[in-house]
Length: 610
Image (cartoon, rainbow, N blue to C red; front, side, top):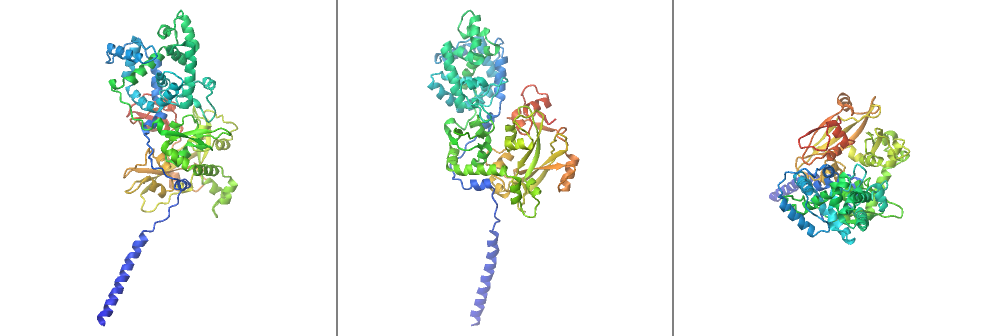
Protein backbone atom coordinates (compact mmCIF):
# COMPACT_ATOMS: atom_id res chain seq x y z
CA UNK A 1 0.00 0.00 0.00
CA UNK A 2 2.82 2.39 0.92
CA UNK A 3 4.66 1.50 -2.27
CA UNK A 4 1.52 2.25 -4.31
CA UNK A 5 1.10 5.68 -2.69
CA UNK A 6 4.77 6.54 -3.29
CA UNK A 7 4.48 5.59 -6.97
CA UNK A 8 1.39 7.81 -7.38
CA UNK A 9 3.20 10.81 -5.84
CA UNK A 10 6.26 10.29 -8.07
CA UNK A 11 4.02 10.05 -11.15
CA UNK A 12 2.21 13.28 -10.22
CA UNK A 13 5.48 15.16 -9.63
CA UNK A 14 6.91 13.93 -12.94
CA UNK A 15 3.77 15.06 -14.83
CA UNK A 16 3.96 18.52 -13.20
CA UNK A 17 7.63 18.90 -14.16
CA UNK A 18 6.87 17.91 -17.76
CA UNK A 19 4.03 20.48 -17.95
CA UNK A 20 6.29 23.18 -16.49
CA UNK A 21 8.93 22.49 -19.17
CA UNK A 22 6.42 22.55 -22.04
CA UNK A 23 4.85 25.90 -21.15
CA UNK A 24 7.86 28.21 -21.71
CA UNK A 25 8.76 26.34 -24.93
CA UNK A 26 5.25 27.02 -26.22
CA UNK A 27 5.49 30.68 -25.20
CA UNK A 28 8.74 31.11 -27.14
CA UNK A 29 6.89 30.32 -30.36
CA UNK A 30 4.59 33.36 -29.99
CA UNK A 31 5.86 36.10 -32.27
CA UNK A 32 4.69 39.70 -32.28
CA UNK A 33 2.40 40.57 -35.17
CA UNK A 34 4.17 42.71 -37.78
CA UNK A 35 2.07 45.46 -39.35
CA UNK A 36 2.24 45.40 -43.15
CA UNK A 37 2.31 48.53 -45.29
CA UNK A 38 -0.63 49.11 -47.63
CA UNK A 39 1.56 48.23 -50.62
CA UNK A 40 2.64 44.88 -49.14
CA UNK A 41 -0.91 44.08 -48.02
CA UNK A 42 -2.09 44.60 -51.61
CA UNK A 43 0.76 42.51 -53.05
CA UNK A 44 0.14 39.69 -50.56
CA UNK A 45 -3.23 39.10 -52.28
CA UNK A 46 -1.74 38.99 -55.80
CA UNK A 47 -1.96 35.82 -57.80
CA UNK A 48 1.64 34.75 -58.24
CA UNK A 49 3.29 33.80 -61.49
CA UNK A 50 6.00 31.14 -61.33
CA UNK A 51 8.18 32.57 -64.10
CA UNK A 52 11.18 34.52 -62.83
CA UNK A 53 11.85 37.97 -64.21
CA UNK A 54 15.16 37.96 -66.08
CA UNK A 55 16.83 41.33 -65.90
CA UNK A 56 20.39 42.04 -66.94
CA UNK A 57 21.29 45.18 -64.97
CA UNK A 58 24.22 46.05 -67.21
CA UNK A 59 21.97 46.01 -70.25
CA UNK A 60 19.34 48.11 -68.45
CA UNK A 61 21.97 50.79 -67.90
CA UNK A 62 22.17 51.26 -71.68
CA UNK A 63 18.84 53.10 -71.43
CA UNK A 64 20.45 56.03 -69.68
CA UNK A 65 23.99 55.64 -70.96
CA UNK A 66 24.55 58.02 -73.87
CA UNK A 67 28.31 57.57 -74.06
CA UNK A 68 28.21 55.36 -77.20
CA UNK A 69 25.85 57.80 -78.91
CA UNK A 70 28.18 60.71 -78.13
CA UNK A 71 31.27 58.76 -79.26
CA UNK A 72 29.81 57.60 -82.58
CA UNK A 73 28.35 61.02 -83.38
CA UNK A 74 31.74 62.60 -82.71
CA UNK A 75 33.50 59.99 -84.87
CA UNK A 76 31.20 60.51 -87.84
CA UNK A 77 31.69 64.27 -87.68
CA UNK A 78 35.46 64.29 -87.12
CA UNK A 79 36.97 61.18 -88.76
CA UNK A 80 39.40 62.18 -91.50
CA UNK A 81 38.79 59.76 -94.35
CA UNK A 82 42.10 60.70 -95.96
CA UNK A 83 44.30 59.75 -92.98
CA UNK A 84 45.43 56.10 -93.00
CA UNK A 85 44.76 54.21 -89.76
CA UNK A 86 47.28 51.62 -88.58
CA UNK A 87 45.08 48.59 -87.90
CA UNK A 88 45.85 45.02 -88.96
CA UNK A 89 43.38 44.35 -91.81
CA UNK A 90 44.86 43.52 -95.24
CA UNK A 91 43.37 45.69 -97.99
CA UNK A 92 42.83 42.72 -100.32
CA UNK A 93 40.93 40.82 -97.63
CA UNK A 94 38.75 43.87 -96.97
CA UNK A 95 37.99 44.19 -100.71
CA UNK A 96 36.87 40.55 -100.83
CA UNK A 97 34.56 40.99 -97.84
CA UNK A 98 33.05 44.23 -99.20
CA UNK A 99 32.40 42.47 -102.52
CA UNK A 100 30.64 39.64 -100.65
CA UNK A 101 28.47 42.19 -98.80
CA UNK A 102 27.68 43.98 -102.08
CA UNK A 103 26.56 40.73 -103.74
CA UNK A 104 23.72 40.22 -101.26
CA UNK A 105 22.73 43.87 -100.78
CA UNK A 106 20.79 46.41 -102.90
CA UNK A 107 23.41 49.01 -101.98
CA UNK A 108 26.42 49.80 -104.18
CA UNK A 109 29.14 48.82 -101.71
CA UNK A 110 32.55 49.36 -103.27
CA UNK A 111 36.02 49.67 -101.81
CA UNK A 112 37.74 53.05 -101.46
CA UNK A 113 40.49 54.31 -99.19
CA UNK A 114 38.11 56.52 -97.17
CA UNK A 115 35.85 53.58 -96.31
CA UNK A 116 38.86 51.46 -95.32
CA UNK A 117 40.08 54.21 -92.98
CA UNK A 118 36.70 54.52 -91.23
CA UNK A 119 36.39 50.72 -90.80
CA UNK A 120 39.88 50.54 -89.32
CA UNK A 121 39.17 53.53 -87.06
CA UNK A 122 36.07 51.77 -85.66
CA UNK A 123 38.06 48.57 -85.15
CA UNK A 124 40.82 50.43 -83.35
CA UNK A 125 38.69 52.66 -81.09
CA UNK A 126 35.14 51.27 -80.86
CA UNK A 127 35.39 47.47 -80.43
CA UNK A 128 33.94 47.58 -76.92
CA UNK A 129 31.15 49.92 -78.02
CA UNK A 130 30.10 47.55 -80.81
CA UNK A 131 30.06 44.64 -78.36
CA UNK A 132 27.45 46.53 -76.31
CA UNK A 133 25.56 47.64 -79.43
CA UNK A 134 25.20 44.04 -80.61
CA UNK A 135 23.50 43.15 -77.31
CA UNK A 136 21.00 45.97 -77.81
CA UNK A 137 20.46 44.95 -81.43
CA UNK A 138 19.00 41.63 -80.27
CA UNK A 139 16.04 43.60 -78.89
CA UNK A 140 15.63 46.31 -81.56
CA UNK A 141 16.61 44.67 -84.87
CA UNK A 142 13.62 42.25 -84.99
CA UNK A 143 11.31 45.29 -84.65
CA UNK A 144 13.07 47.07 -87.53
CA UNK A 145 13.22 44.01 -89.79
CA UNK A 146 9.51 43.19 -89.39
CA UNK A 147 8.50 46.74 -90.38
CA UNK A 148 10.97 47.03 -93.28
CA UNK A 149 10.01 43.62 -94.68
CA UNK A 150 6.33 44.69 -94.89
CA UNK A 151 7.25 47.83 -96.84
CA UNK A 152 9.86 46.06 -99.04
CA UNK A 153 12.69 48.22 -97.70
CA UNK A 154 16.23 46.74 -97.53
CA UNK A 155 16.69 45.11 -94.13
CA UNK A 156 20.22 46.57 -94.01
CA UNK A 157 18.62 49.95 -93.20
CA UNK A 158 18.43 48.65 -89.61
CA UNK A 159 22.14 49.51 -89.26
CA UNK A 160 21.25 53.16 -89.82
CA UNK A 161 19.72 53.31 -86.32
CA UNK A 162 23.18 52.45 -84.92
CA UNK A 163 24.68 55.41 -86.77
CA UNK A 164 21.79 57.72 -85.89
CA UNK A 165 21.26 57.00 -82.18
CA UNK A 166 23.54 54.13 -81.08
CA UNK A 167 20.23 52.25 -80.51
CA UNK A 168 19.26 54.59 -77.67
CA UNK A 169 15.58 55.64 -77.82
CA UNK A 170 16.30 58.55 -75.46
CA UNK A 171 19.11 60.01 -77.60
CA UNK A 172 18.70 63.72 -78.37
CA UNK A 173 21.05 65.58 -80.72
CA UNK A 174 22.26 69.15 -80.28
CA UNK A 175 19.67 70.22 -82.85
CA UNK A 176 16.83 68.47 -80.95
CA UNK A 177 16.50 65.34 -83.12
CA UNK A 178 15.09 62.62 -80.87
CA UNK A 179 14.79 58.84 -80.63
CA UNK A 180 16.18 55.79 -82.41
CA UNK A 181 15.69 57.40 -85.84
CA UNK A 182 16.47 60.98 -84.76
CA UNK A 183 13.37 62.78 -85.97
CA UNK A 184 13.19 66.55 -85.61
CA UNK A 185 9.99 67.93 -84.04
CA UNK A 186 8.54 69.11 -87.36
CA UNK A 187 9.35 65.85 -89.16
CA UNK A 188 7.81 63.84 -86.33
CA UNK A 189 4.58 65.84 -86.61
CA UNK A 190 4.69 65.48 -90.42
CA UNK A 191 4.67 61.68 -90.02
CA UNK A 192 1.84 61.74 -87.41
CA UNK A 193 4.00 60.98 -84.35
CA UNK A 194 2.32 62.19 -81.15
CA UNK A 195 4.40 64.71 -79.18
CA UNK A 196 2.88 66.26 -76.04
CA UNK A 197 3.76 66.84 -72.37
CA UNK A 198 3.49 63.13 -71.49
CA UNK A 199 4.31 61.28 -74.72
CA UNK A 200 6.96 61.58 -77.43
CA UNK A 201 6.43 58.87 -80.03
CA UNK A 202 9.73 59.75 -81.69
CA UNK A 203 11.15 57.52 -78.91
CA UNK A 204 8.64 54.72 -79.55
CA UNK A 205 10.52 51.93 -81.39
CA UNK A 206 7.46 50.65 -83.29
CA UNK A 207 5.87 53.95 -84.32
CA UNK A 208 9.15 55.75 -85.08
CA UNK A 209 10.31 52.80 -87.23
CA UNK A 210 7.02 52.92 -89.16
CA UNK A 211 7.59 56.66 -89.76
CA UNK A 212 11.18 55.98 -90.88
CA UNK A 213 9.91 53.31 -93.27
CA UNK A 214 7.41 55.78 -94.73
CA UNK A 215 10.17 58.36 -95.25
CA UNK A 216 12.48 55.84 -96.94
CA UNK A 217 9.73 54.75 -99.35
CA UNK A 218 8.98 58.34 -100.35
CA UNK A 219 12.63 59.26 -100.87
CA UNK A 220 13.33 56.15 -102.95
CA UNK A 221 10.48 57.15 -105.29
CA UNK A 222 12.34 60.47 -105.76
CA UNK A 223 16.00 59.35 -106.11
CA UNK A 224 15.67 55.66 -107.06
CA UNK A 225 19.00 55.04 -105.28
CA UNK A 226 19.32 53.79 -101.69
CA UNK A 227 22.64 55.56 -101.05
CA UNK A 228 21.08 58.89 -102.03
CA UNK A 229 18.10 58.04 -99.78
CA UNK A 230 20.54 57.63 -96.86
CA UNK A 231 22.23 60.93 -97.72
CA UNK A 232 18.85 62.68 -97.86
CA UNK A 233 17.92 61.19 -94.47
CA UNK A 234 20.94 62.91 -92.95
CA UNK A 235 21.04 66.25 -94.76
CA UNK A 236 17.61 66.54 -96.37
CA UNK A 237 16.56 65.95 -99.99
CA UNK A 238 17.28 69.59 -100.89
CA UNK A 239 21.01 69.26 -100.16
CA UNK A 240 21.21 66.05 -102.22
CA UNK A 241 19.52 67.77 -105.17
CA UNK A 242 21.97 70.70 -104.93
CA UNK A 243 24.93 68.27 -104.86
CA UNK A 244 23.63 66.55 -108.03
CA UNK A 245 23.42 69.92 -109.81
CA UNK A 246 26.88 71.04 -108.65
CA UNK A 247 28.44 67.76 -109.82
CA UNK A 248 27.14 68.35 -113.33
CA UNK A 249 24.16 66.03 -113.12
CA UNK A 250 25.89 62.93 -111.71
CA UNK A 251 23.63 60.70 -109.59
CA UNK A 252 26.05 58.30 -107.84
CA UNK A 253 26.72 58.93 -104.14
CA UNK A 254 30.50 58.67 -104.49
CA UNK A 255 30.37 61.10 -107.45
CA UNK A 256 28.47 63.81 -105.55
CA UNK A 257 29.92 63.12 -102.10
CA UNK A 258 32.31 66.07 -102.06
CA UNK A 259 29.41 68.44 -102.81
CA UNK A 260 27.40 67.26 -99.78
CA UNK A 261 27.60 68.78 -96.25
CA UNK A 262 30.70 67.65 -94.34
CA UNK A 263 28.77 65.47 -91.87
CA UNK A 264 26.93 63.68 -94.70
CA UNK A 265 30.26 62.91 -96.40
CA UNK A 266 31.10 60.61 -93.47
CA UNK A 267 27.53 59.41 -92.94
CA UNK A 268 27.14 56.74 -95.63
CA UNK A 269 30.71 55.38 -95.10
CA UNK A 270 29.91 55.14 -91.36
CA UNK A 271 26.77 53.17 -92.27
CA UNK A 272 28.85 50.75 -94.39
CA UNK A 273 31.51 50.48 -91.66
CA UNK A 274 28.79 49.60 -89.13
CA UNK A 275 27.35 46.98 -91.49
CA UNK A 276 30.84 45.50 -91.95
CA UNK A 277 31.52 45.23 -88.20
CA UNK A 278 28.17 43.53 -87.57
CA UNK A 279 28.72 41.11 -90.46
CA UNK A 280 32.36 40.24 -89.59
CA UNK A 281 32.48 40.76 -85.83
CA UNK A 282 33.65 37.19 -85.16
CA UNK A 283 36.61 37.56 -87.52
CA UNK A 284 37.73 40.62 -85.52
CA UNK A 285 37.20 39.13 -82.05
CA UNK A 286 34.16 41.26 -81.18
CA UNK A 287 32.03 39.23 -78.77
CA UNK A 288 28.47 40.55 -78.30
CA UNK A 289 27.46 41.16 -74.71
CA UNK A 290 24.50 39.16 -73.43
CA UNK A 291 21.02 40.65 -73.80
CA UNK A 292 18.66 38.69 -71.58
CA UNK A 293 15.35 40.31 -72.56
CA UNK A 294 14.32 39.77 -76.17
CA UNK A 295 11.48 41.56 -77.95
CA UNK A 296 9.49 38.34 -78.37
CA UNK A 297 9.58 37.90 -74.57
CA UNK A 298 7.48 41.05 -74.10
CA UNK A 299 3.87 42.00 -74.74
CA UNK A 300 1.58 45.02 -74.30
CA UNK A 301 -1.45 45.78 -72.13
CA UNK A 302 -3.94 48.64 -72.44
CA UNK A 303 -3.89 51.09 -69.52
CA UNK A 304 -7.29 52.28 -68.28
CA UNK A 305 -6.20 54.80 -65.62
CA UNK A 306 -3.12 56.97 -65.21
CA UNK A 307 -0.29 55.11 -63.49
CA UNK A 308 3.36 55.90 -62.78
CA UNK A 309 6.39 53.71 -63.44
CA UNK A 310 7.25 53.83 -59.72
CA UNK A 311 3.84 52.44 -58.75
CA UNK A 312 4.19 49.68 -61.34
CA UNK A 313 7.74 48.88 -60.23
CA UNK A 314 6.62 48.63 -56.58
CA UNK A 315 3.62 46.46 -57.38
CA UNK A 316 5.28 44.12 -59.90
CA UNK A 317 8.70 43.95 -58.17
CA UNK A 318 10.70 45.10 -61.20
CA UNK A 319 13.21 47.93 -61.65
CA UNK A 320 11.96 51.24 -63.07
CA UNK A 321 14.85 51.15 -65.57
CA UNK A 322 13.27 48.11 -67.23
CA UNK A 323 9.95 49.91 -67.59
CA UNK A 324 11.78 52.91 -69.06
CA UNK A 325 13.64 50.73 -71.54
CA UNK A 326 10.50 48.97 -72.73
CA UNK A 327 8.39 52.17 -72.78
CA UNK A 328 10.73 55.02 -73.78
CA UNK A 329 8.00 57.21 -75.31
CA UNK A 330 6.58 58.17 -71.89
CA UNK A 331 8.56 61.32 -71.09
CA UNK A 332 7.62 61.73 -67.40
CA UNK A 333 7.68 58.03 -66.44
CA UNK A 334 3.87 58.18 -66.29
CA UNK A 335 1.37 56.37 -68.52
CA UNK A 336 -1.42 58.94 -68.95
CA UNK A 337 -5.11 58.20 -69.46
CA UNK A 338 -6.71 60.25 -72.25
CA UNK A 339 -10.48 60.41 -72.74
CA UNK A 340 -11.51 58.13 -75.59
CA UNK A 341 -7.91 57.13 -76.34
CA UNK A 342 -6.05 54.04 -75.14
CA UNK A 343 -2.37 54.08 -74.18
CA UNK A 344 -0.35 50.88 -73.97
CA UNK A 345 2.37 49.58 -71.69
CA UNK A 346 4.99 47.01 -72.73
CA UNK A 347 5.99 44.49 -70.05
CA UNK A 348 7.96 41.21 -69.87
CA UNK A 349 5.55 38.33 -70.45
CA UNK A 350 5.95 37.01 -66.90
CA UNK A 351 4.83 40.42 -65.58
CA UNK A 352 1.92 40.57 -68.04
CA UNK A 353 0.32 37.64 -66.22
CA UNK A 354 0.69 39.37 -62.83
CA UNK A 355 -0.76 42.63 -64.21
CA UNK A 356 -3.79 41.13 -65.97
CA UNK A 357 -4.65 38.80 -63.06
CA UNK A 358 -4.56 41.65 -60.53
CA UNK A 359 -5.60 44.65 -62.63
CA UNK A 360 -8.43 45.79 -60.32
CA UNK A 361 -6.18 45.66 -57.27
CA UNK A 362 -3.46 47.60 -59.08
CA UNK A 363 -5.84 50.43 -59.99
CA UNK A 364 -7.24 50.38 -56.44
CA UNK A 365 -3.72 50.91 -55.09
CA UNK A 366 -3.11 53.78 -57.54
CA UNK A 367 -6.35 55.43 -56.45
CA UNK A 368 -5.36 55.01 -52.79
CA UNK A 369 -1.98 56.62 -53.51
CA UNK A 370 -3.61 59.63 -55.17
CA UNK A 371 -5.99 60.11 -52.21
CA UNK A 372 -3.14 59.93 -49.70
CA UNK A 373 -1.15 62.57 -51.60
CA UNK A 374 -4.05 65.04 -51.87
CA UNK A 375 -5.63 64.60 -48.43
CA UNK A 376 -6.98 68.00 -47.23
CA UNK A 377 -5.72 69.57 -43.99
CA UNK A 378 -9.22 69.55 -42.44
CA UNK A 379 -9.60 65.83 -43.10
CA UNK A 380 -6.12 65.22 -41.66
CA UNK A 381 -7.25 67.08 -38.53
CA UNK A 382 -10.24 64.75 -38.16
CA UNK A 383 -8.17 61.58 -38.41
CA UNK A 384 -5.21 62.87 -36.33
CA UNK A 385 -4.50 60.88 -33.12
CA UNK A 386 -6.20 62.27 -30.00
CA UNK A 387 -4.07 64.42 -27.75
CA UNK A 388 -1.72 65.37 -30.58
CA UNK A 389 -1.86 68.93 -31.96
CA UNK A 390 -3.38 69.05 -35.44
CA UNK A 391 -0.54 71.08 -36.95
CA UNK A 392 2.05 68.65 -35.58
CA UNK A 393 0.04 65.68 -36.92
CA UNK A 394 -0.06 67.15 -40.41
CA UNK A 395 3.48 68.52 -40.59
CA UNK A 396 5.05 65.38 -39.07
CA UNK A 397 4.05 63.48 -42.21
CA UNK A 398 5.77 66.07 -44.44
CA UNK A 399 9.46 66.44 -45.23
CA UNK A 400 10.35 69.85 -46.64
CA UNK A 401 13.17 69.92 -49.17
CA UNK A 402 14.57 72.58 -51.46
CA UNK A 403 15.65 72.01 -55.04
CA UNK A 404 17.49 74.48 -57.29
CA UNK A 405 16.33 74.32 -60.91
CA UNK A 406 19.12 73.30 -63.29
CA UNK A 407 19.55 73.27 -67.05
CA UNK A 408 17.28 70.70 -68.68
CA UNK A 409 14.85 70.49 -65.73
CA UNK A 410 11.09 70.74 -66.04
CA UNK A 411 8.28 70.31 -63.51
CA UNK A 412 7.67 66.76 -64.70
CA UNK A 413 11.23 65.51 -64.12
CA UNK A 414 11.44 67.26 -60.72
CA UNK A 415 8.06 65.85 -59.64
CA UNK A 416 9.19 62.36 -60.69
CA UNK A 417 12.49 62.72 -58.84
CA UNK A 418 10.68 63.44 -55.54
CA UNK A 419 7.59 61.26 -56.28
CA UNK A 420 5.13 64.16 -56.01
CA UNK A 421 2.45 65.61 -58.30
CA UNK A 422 3.09 68.49 -60.69
CA UNK A 423 -0.04 70.23 -59.35
CA UNK A 424 1.39 70.06 -55.81
CA UNK A 425 4.70 71.52 -56.96
CA UNK A 426 2.85 74.45 -58.52
CA UNK A 427 0.73 74.97 -55.40
CA UNK A 428 3.71 74.87 -52.98
CA UNK A 429 5.63 77.40 -55.06
CA UNK A 430 2.74 79.63 -56.24
CA UNK A 431 3.34 78.75 -59.89
CA UNK A 432 0.59 79.64 -62.37
CA UNK A 433 2.17 77.87 -65.36
CA UNK A 434 4.54 74.93 -65.95
CA UNK A 435 7.40 77.28 -66.84
CA UNK A 436 10.23 77.46 -64.30
CA UNK A 437 13.24 79.76 -64.36
CA UNK A 438 16.79 78.41 -64.36
CA UNK A 439 18.32 78.83 -60.89
CA UNK A 440 15.01 79.16 -59.03
CA UNK A 441 14.74 77.27 -55.73
CA UNK A 442 11.59 75.17 -55.38
CA UNK A 443 10.01 74.07 -52.10
CA UNK A 444 9.06 70.38 -52.06
CA UNK A 445 7.00 68.46 -49.50
CA UNK A 446 7.16 64.67 -49.60
CA UNK A 447 4.61 62.39 -47.93
CA UNK A 448 6.37 59.81 -45.74
CA UNK A 449 4.76 56.65 -44.37
CA UNK A 450 4.87 56.90 -40.57
CA UNK A 451 5.62 53.19 -40.23
CA UNK A 452 8.75 53.65 -42.34
CA UNK A 453 9.79 56.88 -40.58
CA UNK A 454 9.65 55.81 -36.93
CA UNK A 455 11.58 52.59 -36.51
CA UNK A 456 11.17 50.66 -33.24
CA UNK A 457 13.71 47.91 -33.25
CA UNK A 458 13.54 44.67 -31.25
CA UNK A 459 16.71 44.06 -29.29
CA UNK A 460 17.50 41.08 -31.48
CA UNK A 461 17.78 43.24 -34.62
CA UNK A 462 21.31 44.68 -35.03
CA UNK A 463 20.27 47.97 -36.62
CA UNK A 464 22.54 51.00 -36.65
CA UNK A 465 21.20 54.55 -36.88
CA UNK A 466 23.42 57.04 -38.66
CA UNK A 467 23.21 60.79 -38.98
CA UNK A 468 24.50 62.09 -42.27
CA UNK A 469 25.35 65.76 -41.97
CA UNK A 470 24.03 67.13 -45.20
CA UNK A 471 22.49 70.56 -45.85
CA UNK A 472 20.63 72.01 -48.80
CA UNK A 473 20.51 75.80 -48.97
CA UNK A 474 17.35 77.72 -49.79
CA UNK A 475 17.19 81.17 -51.41
CA UNK A 476 18.29 82.95 -48.25
CA UNK A 477 20.41 80.08 -46.85
CA UNK A 478 18.33 80.03 -43.64
CA UNK A 479 16.36 76.79 -44.04
CA UNK A 480 18.34 73.56 -43.99
CA UNK A 481 17.57 69.85 -43.88
CA UNK A 482 19.39 66.86 -42.40
CA UNK A 483 19.23 63.37 -43.86
CA UNK A 484 19.10 60.51 -41.36
CA UNK A 485 19.53 56.89 -42.38
CA UNK A 486 18.85 53.65 -40.52
CA UNK A 487 21.06 50.70 -41.46
CA UNK A 488 20.70 46.98 -40.85
CA UNK A 489 23.34 44.23 -41.02
CA UNK A 490 22.05 41.10 -42.79
CA UNK A 491 21.98 38.10 -40.46
CA UNK A 492 21.66 34.37 -41.17
CA UNK A 493 18.21 33.45 -42.46
CA UNK A 494 17.38 36.99 -43.59
CA UNK A 495 15.89 37.89 -46.94
CA UNK A 496 14.55 41.16 -48.37
CA UNK A 497 10.97 40.19 -47.51
CA UNK A 498 11.67 39.51 -43.83
CA UNK A 499 13.77 42.68 -43.49
CA UNK A 500 11.05 44.78 -45.15
CA UNK A 501 8.48 43.44 -42.65
CA UNK A 502 10.77 44.15 -39.68
CA UNK A 503 11.10 47.78 -40.63
CA UNK A 504 7.65 48.48 -42.08
CA UNK A 505 8.91 49.13 -45.60
CA UNK A 506 8.70 47.36 -48.98
CA UNK A 507 11.05 45.16 -50.98
CA UNK A 508 10.98 47.66 -53.85
CA UNK A 509 12.02 50.52 -51.54
CA UNK A 510 14.85 48.45 -50.04
CA UNK A 511 16.16 47.66 -53.55
CA UNK A 512 15.96 51.30 -54.59
CA UNK A 513 17.67 52.58 -51.41
CA UNK A 514 20.55 50.12 -51.85
CA UNK A 515 20.81 50.05 -55.69
CA UNK A 516 19.99 46.31 -55.75
CA UNK A 517 19.16 44.72 -59.10
CA UNK A 518 18.01 41.39 -57.69
CA UNK A 519 16.57 39.98 -54.43
CA UNK A 520 19.87 38.33 -53.49
CA UNK A 521 21.69 39.73 -50.43
CA UNK A 522 24.91 38.51 -48.85
CA UNK A 523 25.37 37.58 -45.20
CA UNK A 524 26.91 40.52 -43.32
CA UNK A 525 25.93 43.12 -45.94
CA UNK A 526 24.85 46.49 -44.52
CA UNK A 527 21.54 47.70 -45.92
CA UNK A 528 19.94 51.14 -45.65
CA UNK A 529 16.40 50.38 -44.45
CA UNK A 530 15.08 53.95 -44.22
CA UNK A 531 16.12 57.49 -45.09
CA UNK A 532 14.52 60.38 -43.19
CA UNK A 533 14.79 64.01 -44.27
CA UNK A 534 14.09 66.47 -41.44
CA UNK A 535 13.85 70.25 -41.76
CA UNK A 536 16.01 72.21 -39.33
CA UNK A 537 15.39 75.94 -39.10
CA UNK A 538 17.35 78.60 -37.28
CA UNK A 539 16.18 79.40 -34.66
CA UNK A 540 14.92 75.84 -34.01
CA UNK A 541 11.15 75.99 -33.47
CA UNK A 542 10.42 72.30 -32.88
CA UNK A 543 11.76 69.81 -30.39
CA UNK A 544 14.73 68.02 -31.96
CA UNK A 545 17.30 65.93 -30.14
CA UNK A 546 20.00 68.30 -28.89
CA UNK A 547 22.89 66.11 -29.99
CA UNK A 548 21.56 66.09 -33.60
CA UNK A 549 21.16 69.87 -33.61
CA UNK A 550 24.61 70.47 -32.15
CA UNK A 551 26.23 68.11 -34.62
CA UNK A 552 24.39 69.79 -37.49
CA UNK A 553 25.35 73.33 -36.42
CA UNK A 554 29.00 72.49 -35.85
CA UNK A 555 29.70 70.35 -38.86
CA UNK A 556 27.16 70.74 -41.65
CA UNK A 557 28.37 73.14 -44.34
CA UNK A 558 25.99 74.77 -46.78
CA UNK A 559 25.47 73.27 -50.23
CA UNK A 560 27.43 76.14 -51.75
CA UNK A 561 30.63 75.14 -49.99
CA UNK A 562 30.05 71.41 -49.47
CA UNK A 563 32.08 69.11 -51.67
CA UNK A 564 32.62 65.39 -51.99
CA UNK A 565 35.10 63.20 -53.83
CA UNK A 566 33.91 60.34 -56.01
CA UNK A 567 36.26 57.70 -57.41
CA UNK A 568 35.21 56.37 -60.81
CA UNK A 569 34.39 52.65 -60.89
CA UNK A 570 34.47 50.25 -63.82
CA UNK A 571 31.35 50.71 -65.95
CA UNK A 572 30.67 54.25 -64.70
CA UNK A 573 29.64 57.06 -67.04
CA UNK A 574 29.13 60.73 -66.24
CA UNK A 575 25.38 60.16 -66.54
CA UNK A 576 25.33 57.24 -64.07
CA UNK A 577 27.47 59.22 -61.61
CA UNK A 578 25.20 62.29 -61.86
CA UNK A 579 22.19 60.07 -61.05
CA UNK A 580 23.80 59.22 -57.68
CA UNK A 581 23.58 62.89 -56.64
CA UNK A 582 20.08 64.50 -56.89
CA UNK A 583 20.18 67.81 -58.73
CA UNK A 584 23.63 67.22 -60.21
CA UNK A 585 23.94 67.23 -64.01
CA UNK A 586 26.63 65.98 -66.39
CA UNK A 587 27.58 69.56 -67.24
CA UNK A 588 28.06 70.30 -63.51
CA UNK A 589 30.51 67.41 -63.09
CA UNK A 590 32.39 68.44 -66.23
CA UNK A 591 32.60 72.06 -65.04
CA UNK A 592 33.74 71.17 -61.50
CA UNK A 593 36.47 68.86 -62.80
CA UNK A 594 37.58 70.68 -65.96
CA UNK A 595 36.44 67.83 -68.23
CA UNK A 596 35.97 68.83 -71.88
CA UNK A 597 34.55 65.54 -73.16
CA UNK A 598 33.00 62.58 -71.30
CA UNK A 599 36.14 60.43 -71.23
CA UNK A 600 36.57 59.14 -67.66
CA UNK A 601 38.62 56.18 -66.44
CA UNK A 602 38.31 53.82 -63.44
CA UNK A 603 40.14 55.21 -60.40
CA UNK A 604 39.80 58.83 -61.54
CA UNK A 605 38.82 61.21 -58.70
CA UNK A 606 35.89 63.53 -59.39
CA UNK A 607 34.86 66.50 -57.27
CA UNK A 608 31.09 66.69 -56.60
CA UNK A 609 29.23 69.83 -55.47
CA UNK A 610 32.37 71.91 -55.73
